[in-house]
Image (tube, rainbow, N blue to C red; front, side):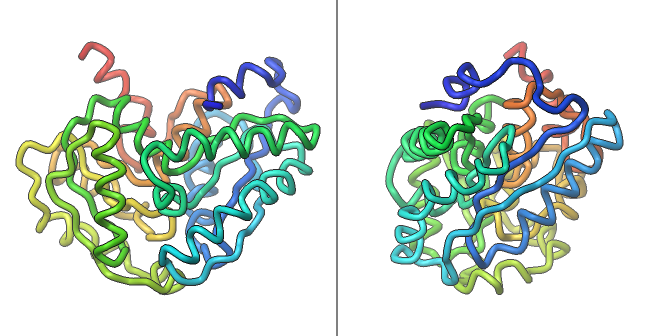
Length: 272
């Protein structure tokens, strides 16, 4: 079940005028989504006055390897049911590579299963996944070729490349930082990302994926990299934020996080 399918099933009137509850499903070792997303939505609140609160469920995962990722997948539905107890307005499954490890277009089935878990618990809510959000956002802005940075070991990066290319988007270059401890990924310095991006093969690229991982911090670098290269800069976190806002029916007006979240990027590509 897609995000739009589930959205159609929920109430059209806001349950809490002036405020929205965002449910997050994150790996137990994730330290970034619960910092970057609240900061992004703080900026949205600053611009609009609408408030957002965050309510998380955690699935065990310490090391970023195929075995632990697949084990986490088995816990995701229980997490969706648990977080729906908070009567959230939208649920975001924030582990991109855990979904992609399941094979091409796995986000479609994953979002359906999580949506059914929430609905079965009596609290239906639209569901997005970071994997689906990244792919759909790139497709939505008309990005046919991208260059990408990941923190993963090379085999996992290759898997992410295959997944994105399976969605019709060519990956011109992908840098692997080769960090497998998820806590260590969360400690990577985002100020290093501009220099890493400079070493990417960007000729012919329509966009840069500055962090193809919800755990690798990137927010402080997004605007600077976008301004330096003149290309849209997307991350797993900004794409997820964009889809959360879409699910809630809210126009993004977030400053300092790239054109996508300023509300300008999709409008710029609407004529293509």
